[in-house]
Amino acid sequence: MKTVLEIVRSKVSSTYDDEQCQDAIDEIGMCIVSYCNLDDEDDIPEELYYTWANMSHDLLKPLTNDDIEDIDSSRISNIKIGDTSISLRSAANEINIDRTNSDTIIASYYSQLNKFKKLR
Image (cartoon, rainbow, N blue to C red; front, side, top):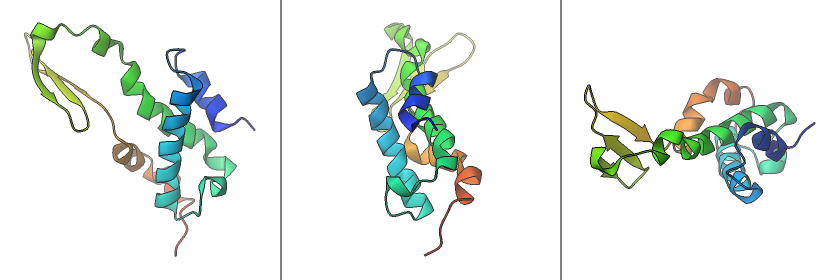
């Protein structure tokens, strides 16, 4: 079985090194431990490794968005610092680029996580 880091590395571009990927894995791992009522990351079952990797990738994905690199600063209409949100002016409408946080990611994976949730 591949490690979560190996799975994440296969999904993200070479822009991010192992330390950055591991940070995302650790953050999501703590969320999984908390949500599933586990004692620590070692208790996360192997059956959740791909879900864990996908969640970690989702946390990194907004950071690799090519649209962010190509932002013309004259198009910025609003910047929100907490949970990073940048609003851009567009001819037709306003474009929003949001940095996903771990709570949003956990919420989108409830169905997979609920199968492994322990009752206390």
